[in-house]
Length: 206
Image 1 (cartoon, rainbow, N blue to C red):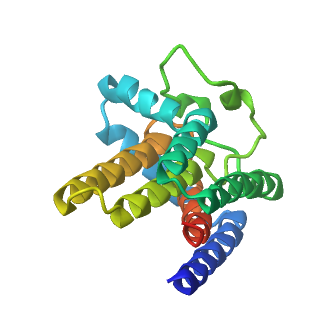
Image 2: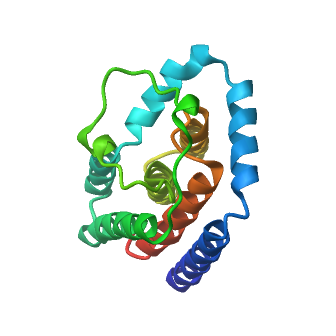
């Protein structure tokens, strides 16, 4: 099983690097713009507050604490290696934003409307690829779902329900990145690939 996670994690990271090279060619600019317009047209502005709340939950402050709590309840010391992968993945995210000049959506698409932002939101490197929110939520969701699956204290029906809620929460979080005009779709895809890759590596130690 550990070898499988190692192979799958490597594959997803290779997908991430390959996708990054495609994004760097600007071949997907039209796809980004059209997807943003369609998603914003289909999600009414009356939901912006709810979507903004999800965006807030995806901050590095909230998800770092959430991952720490999950690992504490897992009660395995080696599991805390996952935190190292979590923060290293975000280091790769920063490197990616330095490597690839990919400005985010223009201000006319911006629909975040809560009066509060965490300090990490004020860090703007000038490039939006890959999406840190997408990276973090996919990583934490993968770890949480795996721990639930391996739990012997929860009945199968409860595991299934909780995992369904995790998947639904993750999908909503990824959609908010585009619906609120904070990221392009390619940013979300890249961040998700990065999160899956490093998330799979962390499962080796769970």
